[in-house]
Amino acid sequence: MTKILGISLGHDSNLALIEDGQVKAVMEAERYFRQKRYKLSAEHLEPGKFPSTYQYTDVEDLKLFLRRVKEEWGEKFDHVAVQNQGRKQEFENLKILHREAGISYGEIHHLDHHLSHASLSYFTSPFRDALVLSYDGIGNDGKTVFFQAKGNALTYLANIPLAFGQSYNNMGYIAGVSPEIEGTTSGKAMGLTSYGTVRGKWLPYARKYVRKYRKFKSAKVGDLQQRGAGHRINDVGLRDIPELKKYLVPRQFPFEIQTWQEKVKLFFGLIHQDELRLLGPKDKDSQDLAATVQVAWTEEVMRLLREHKGGNANLCVVGGCALNGTTNYEIEKSGLFDKVHFIPNPSDCGLASGAALHVYYGKLGNAFEGSKEYYSPYLGSLPYDLDKLEGLKGRYPHKDVSEADLPGILARLVAADLIVGLVSGRYEVGPRALGNRSILCNPLNPEMREILNDKVKHREWYRPFAPMVAEEDAQTYFTNKAAVPYMSVICDTREEYRDKLPSITHVDGSARIQTVNPSQNPLIYQALKEFGKLKGMPIFLNTSYNPAGEPILNFCEVGLEMLDKTDFDLVIIGTSIFSSHAKKHLLETI
Image (cartoon, rainbow, N blue to C red; front, side):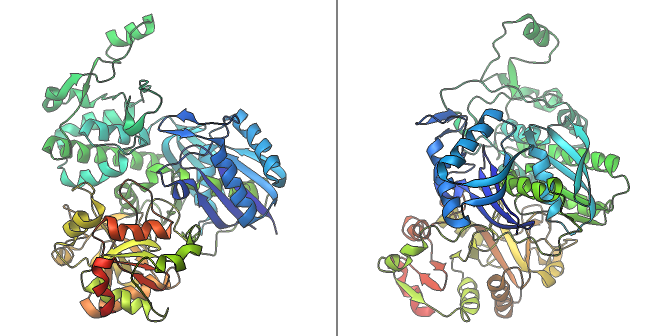
């Protein structure tokens, strides 16, 4: 057996165990430290915390994860694969940390960013050959990169300087979307696009923006840049839209014009001391701008796919931009490719797995003829404090049920319009809750979206909640072209069902669905079918189980604390159902 340890450092840090070319387990730092996009770093081996954009890094955090590797995955590996945006000194420091931790290996490899992305996508696909598109903010080997994949080889095909991830994120700033703690707006901005009307007269300007956008260096604001502090807007193209000129305001973080090159750029209008800042998500111009840029953005992706398709019938899509479900649906609908492969962790949280897979197939030369197995997202750890569960039963009212009865019970609870948190097995990797760390509700209740937001989620009004549906029933209710096991595609709720599924149908009729079959998640599938018997439709409203502002949880205690801190109804951990003391009467109905 060939055993490979994958390590990705920087934001969204993660580690992965690969055995004989299969991803067996993943550790994501954010789930342990309860901070989105958490960074592990070996840039400094000195003790103490060092500022790194939106957080402080401490080498002790990485040492802790290496100890976890040794405890859970062993101390001997045939190979170690490292992706860290090409930082050479950090790569050397990591070797020292391995020795100190007592982890040994035959050979260690330094892998490039997009090559690692592409390897995860292709080597988990069913294809023997494919075109691979990897696009995100920026990697040490490019921003938008095409690969030709065949057998066990990935070859760089084209490196295009279009900054898709950065331009979309920057659009959110222009529209007035409040960024996450690490400075990204993209996820929220995608929800806002549904409220807008695409303005045809704005499209030429939006196309110029997508094609010409370049990221400006952020201004320094203290040690950390929380919530995007210091972000300098680049509004190339968009600032020329006549109706938007009224939103030009003095730049929040001005450029310091000191050199003659900067004076030339200012003179020729390449940089400006004013910037475009719209009024925010409730403003119609903000909504329309988001919708128009989304269309121009998708058009440009499709143009590049047509340009680089060649003779490929199959496509793999990966990188942070592969989370744009609207564009993914356009790719599928276009029919440009016979089959398209998406994965649950296309962003940087999948880089450790990709780097290790590239070593197994690309460097060691093991044969690859397409994966014969479904790429399961349930690769994370069991709850970190599962050993404390019996003690937690002494603090919260609870009822234990049998595993066989659980699907039916879950269906009945959801049908009764209760908000149910579910912690089941190993957590799902990536940024989407796919049933093992989910909050489940009744999508047929027209008020459920508002109830869930008011009682538990407390997030922006314009962000949708997603449906999960039994795979064989999906196309009855939705317009998906294929199975969507990872919530990768935003399709539409069929028009005749929109009034019946109001809580999971977005304002424009769209829905970011997850399809489930019995082999992928038996508990969820059986519960969906039981719910279908009760309510006529095998569909749940599904959203991530996490306290506000935190990543998807992996601590039992954190999940149970939400019974007291929010207006949660019930929490299921394994086969135990918990309530707050104020709602313990709900347990009597089970």
